[in-house]
Amino acid sequence: PQKELVSVKVYNLVGQEVATLVNREYESGVYKVNFDAGQLGSGIYFYTITAGEFKQTRKMTLLK
Image (tube, rainbow, N blue to C red; front, top):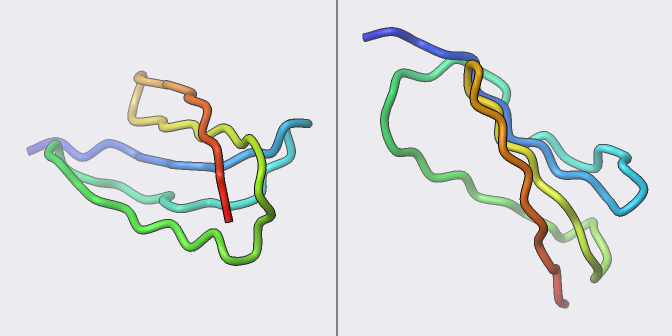
C-alpha cells in the first residue's frame, strides 16, 4: 500500500493557522482525529485537509 502525506490544519477568519491536527504519512483508509478546541474562542474557523494531490477546505462553527 502506498503512503501519502496527510495534513489537517485549522485557520481563523483572517487566515492564521491556529492548530495542526495531523501532519504525517498515512496509508489509504478511514481515520478519526480528535480536536481539542479548549484554547480557541467561539467563532467561525476553517479547516483544510490535504492528502497527496487532494485538498479540501471547509467552514466550521465553534460554540462554547
